Image: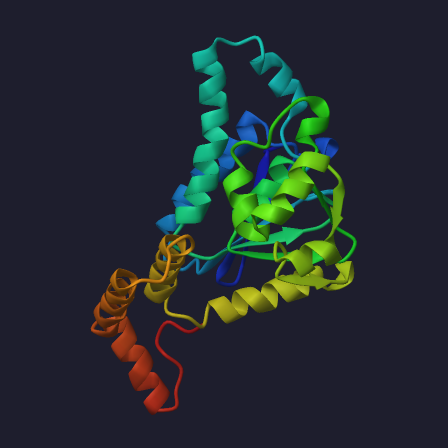
Length: 259
């Protein structure tokens, strides 16, 4: 059975973590499969968004502890390479030129919570749970920490990283990690509706908006920032995609890219 199952639903590619017997623990095979599939999808212009979801009872229980135990016996260089693979995957998701939506149900623990935080949008079932239990087993949520801090802020991250307590989906929604919290029976329909909304946007505009948001997240307001953002808009506005979007709006029709 493949560790990753890819499904096409209209303009969205659904990437199903497919290790249900271990609650989609993120072993090397699954991490490599995710990275490879994202590279493949990036070349397919018909894919307008990506959904990351989990087969079985959970989104992802996090790292594969049996693999981590073996990694403890590796040389420092090999152990660092093992960790770097997951760090690179999270960064590839951050830099991916199309929106990535996390469809979360059941447990999203440790690396699974980090995987969700690295996505652009998170939709969770109202009975889902998030948790960063690493310190309870003598570990640290290292690679995922930048994404957790970005999602819920440094002060809340301190609580959940240091205590390892569980974070119910409703509270994760209140803190900002989760964008929408819905009944489990409505989860797929809500994600599909969101993907449909994303498909209405200009693909180049979405890619540039993601890059812009990534750069702006930690930047203080300043004259230099004002000049930079003005330059971005001027550049985008002169492109063919923006001209088509404006023409379509004025002509009261859908733009060519809309599905």
